Image (cartoon, rainbow, N blue to C red; front, side, top):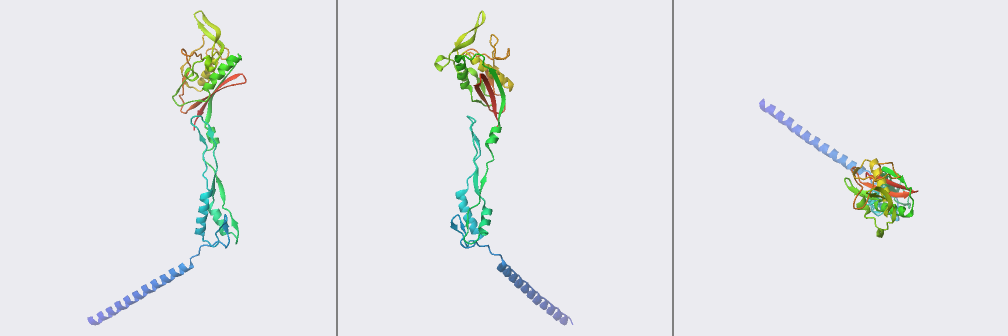
Length: 294
C-alpha cells in the first residue's frame, strides 16, 4: 500500500517538473521573440534628403547624429564669445561690451531634416549678449559731491594759475583711507612750472595785505575743493582759513594753501575709491567728487 502511494507521488512530481520545464522554455522563447520583434520595430534615425547642403557641404543621406556632428564643426568656426564691458582701474575709462555669436544647434538641425532635396541650408546664428554692459558700469560711477565758485578776478595770470593747478588734480583717484595733500599733488608753484604773478593775500605783522605772488589764485581751487569734500562728509585732516575774507565763498568756508607752510588735506573715508574732477567752465570753478561702486 505504501509502495503504491510512493509511486503515485513520484509520478506526480515527475509530471510537475516536466510541466515546469516546458513552461519556462515557453516563456523564454516568447520573451526572445518579443525582444527580436521590438528590435526589428525600432524606428530608424531619419535620413537627410539627397543633395541637401549645409553651408556648401553635402549632408544628404546622413543620420541625425551625423548631421549634428557636422553642425558642431561649423559652429566652432562661427561661435564668438560675448565680451563684458570693462573699466580701467587707473583711469576709470570704460571699454564697451561686444556681443557674441552662437549657432543654434537644434534649429539648424530641424531645418536640415526638413529640407527638400538639393536645398542649401545656412546655420542658424544668433547674437549673444554679455552680462556686464557699459550702462551698468556707468551707473555704478556716482557723483557724491559737487561745488562751484564764481571766478570774480578773471585776469589772464590768475586764470592761468587756476587752470594749471586744476590740471594737476583733475582725475586724481583716491583709494579708501588714502589721504590727499594739495601741496603734494600740485607741487611748488614756480615760474619755471608756468605759474605767473597774480593777486594774493599776504600775512604781515600789521595784518593781511593784498599783493602779488607767483601762483596767486590757487587758493580758490583749494577752497572749492574743501567745500566739495565737506558736502560728501570726507574727513578733513588739515585746513587753514585766510587771514582776511575772500569773495568767492561765505566767510569761514575757505581753505588757504602756501607751499612749505600751510596745506589742505583730506582722507577718503568712504567704502569705495573716489575720483576728483576739477575744471573751469563759464567763469566758474567746478569740483566734482565721483565714487566708483563697481
